[in-house]
Length: 446
Image (cartoon, helix red, strand yellow):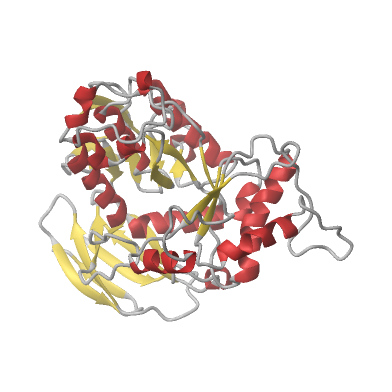
């Protein structure tokens, strides 16, 4: 656990400080120690009174992390735990949760795990789906994998965008489609061999970059001059940041209620025999229906819409549910639908999470039905959320009167800070900017 002086020409602490000044958070990749074979773990943090500490006790193993952790490391990426027993997988996850808390008791730990099991979500680790292939059938399969995993093991799941192991099928088109899907996964990261081709701008450089795969596994060189990829990916990355308040609320729901962020249709429509069969579309949070495109060369995509009325996210066109429709799905578009009565908070574009924004949060209201939504926020850093410290704001839409009521959520224990909202009734030109101060506010959109 040392920084390579041949790579880092400044002290690790200075490096971390420079990264933080650039609003970058650093998580270190780590593999299990091997001493005469892969070791199993035991013990607890802190060590029990009668516990015998050795190299395989998590209390001693965690202490070995401290010199590098104290340089300012923000998180950990424990990899290659496949040989661990189930018990050891739990203990490893526990270590990367309780270990950081033992040093920084009011700072939320973060780690990305390769291995998990039922119940591991109690330690807050994020888990990805492993070293998957860059193939269309793999992308398609990841949707069902994500839905099942999120319902059973942990709501905080994602894939290596583009696939980890490259193949001839890895093209700018496949990468873009995967990027669109990853925008609506809890973990959103581009990672893999031939890492230059996991960068949106890497597809128009004319170069493969460092190639960790065999030559036969890289795309044809004609794929290295694809100018369409970067702007499409930028649009979806911006969308991810604009949905930050919506996504953060879904993450809080996952913590409180066990609801995943990716939600199978049958969670909301258990008696719809067509909805329960869907394995290639899903709800993102409670309001948005996502239909990733996983077919090469597709310009159309069939989407099943459950009962009710639905709005096309991109066009605001209203569709009748209870049927399968064919939608436009050019490379720039991944079908997204929002149900009538939905209320979605939508922020200005950020370049990093903590970037201050001056424009108000837009509250997108989709008319045609009554609806309600509770928005959650907190300081984003400390453990105070475990003590009930946070802001819950409830929005209630009365469709008949075109009236939105804003009030403190039921979980509120402290006063709300004043906040500006732009209320926008979608598919119309009706909107108002209001200041909400924590008192009941009624807004009519005439």
